[in-house]
Amino acid sequence: MFNVILHFLDWIYYKKCYFCKKTSSKGSICDKCYEEIKENLYNRRRLINNIEIFSIATYKDKIQKLIRGIKYHNQKEFAFYTAQILYEFWLKTSYSDIDFEIIPMPSHKKRLKQRRFNHTELIAEEFSKLTGYSINTELVLRIKDTKPQYKLTKPERLKNLKGAFEVKKENYSGKNLLLLDDICTTGVTLQEMIKALNRAGIDKLCGLVISTPE
Ligand SMILES: [Zn+2]
Image 1: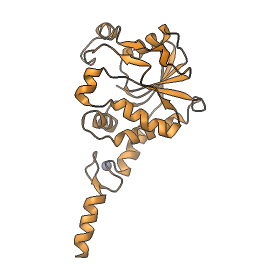
Image 2: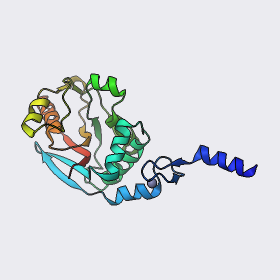
Image 3: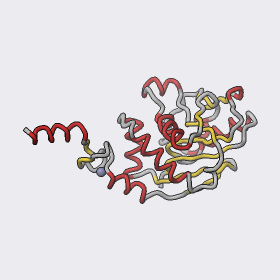
Image 4: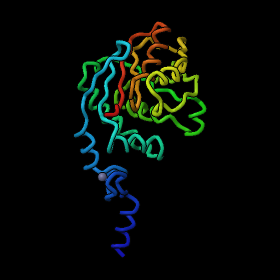
């Protein structure tokens, strides 16, 4: 009888790790896989329209699975782990003493309707709890339903993204803005967003993205 109860408790409290499929007491990611993700991080800094953009991982292996898990497979608790990883990185930068407002990369309303949530917003919410930064989803709107970028060349990407964002200046808090995105390939999406903000006279910006392709 005691064993039955133990098994039942196991079933309630223990889950399988989404990555290695072993039983994990921590939820959908076991300690070993979480540590492995952290061991493979790096600090890549690039400038897009003179704005500093930090990226912390290569879009492959477990990081890719983590992001895809949040985005397509309803693994919403991964937003917490992703934010935790971003936060540990953020504390090491010179920016961590500044008060920012987070701008998660907005989704077009048609895309939101299909997916029901914006995964970058979920990560931003968790990152906000850790940093104390506010989130602003009313300042930058995605007004053009752009095609997926991965099949396009850079000039095609530029054309695709042109006019994709609208900035509602009346919703600007005056704070430094931290642009948050999951993946930055050619940088065209962030570039267009930065341009739109600059046109509205907003230039206190910095970017944080989880990953870039190899
Ligand atoms: Zn695991």
